[in-house]
Length: 261
Ligand code: KIV
Ligand code: NA
Image (cartoon, rainbow, N blue to C red; front, side, top):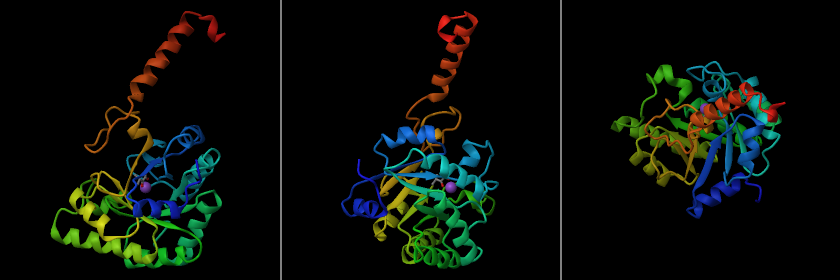
């Protein structure tokens, strides 16, 4: 496979080809993703949930994301590698945001993702993208703002929110973002946003009319049977598969099976 670059993602939208993306946090999974058709990999701050077992992403630090970027970097070559800017590491001022994004880039990220589209954030995105750091935007449900948004619920239901989200998507495009994640946005609105910007939209829980889609790796592999929001498909039932493998192993240990000696 040919190395995927930002330019290729934008070309895909032009040619009406879909973009597939997945999150990843370690070299073992990244090795297998490398063999697949995935276009870009995000080291998401969702690592707070799936790696650290927290119930939000708020406590994830920049150093932690950088560490996982370095892990994934070891075995990812072809897909574009994006590092997530965690809570309070973007948005204060240009200088801090630049400094923080710089750490993820030095760790091996080829772009960063920033939640939000306030005028301050758009200004900083413009600054980064003009200084060699490509930025992916993220609007709709923003897990880092869960306390302000009042929970993990669908976004863009009333007219005011619809207008605001459309404006935010255009503002991110104007600020220089090369793509935008649309998380948990009413599908008809996600489609409208997709049709009104030139850069690719990457949906999660936002219907199937975005230019691409992203899922959290452990979620789509069904590693937690009980975690199944409506939009999520379990492409595997790894919880059962792993549990059975462990029990097989325990059984052979108890039987003093020679294979384990
Ligand atoms: O942290 C993450 O995994 C994300 C994606 C779900 C978009 O931000
Ligand atoms: Na995230």
